[in-house]
Image: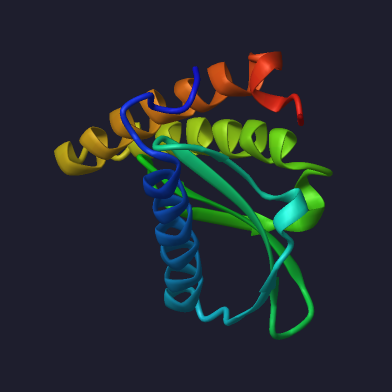
Amino acid sequence: MTQKQDMTAEQQQQWVREQYQVATKYLATQGLVTDSVIVEKSRYLVPIMSVWKLKALDGSYLWVICGDLPSDHNAFNVAPNAREAVRHFSFKWQMQAENLLKTGDKEQEKFAQLLIGKAEGLYDMYQQENLWVIE
């Protein structure tokens, strides 16, 4: 998968900025305030996914994922780099989906199916070596 060809470089940069805002707002809803971003460790696949390494005000580091998928976060120590963080989110979402499917609640089951699809897409991206080559 490559960056969308019909987006200009400026539009791609705008998308990345917007995703950073999504990530920091998401963390705020979780009670976490962002201190800074570690840009060289963060990765983007415009307009599908962004994975951010963020530092919270309390000094902890977090992986945050957002884009055309649910926003989520984990402690930095679950993965040494963005690629492994993507794999971790994929596995995490698969497990969450399994638990949701057991509830018998139709709405929860719909969300579980969404999570399964997104988790499979993340794992596909994780496996594509060419997406993780830094030029």
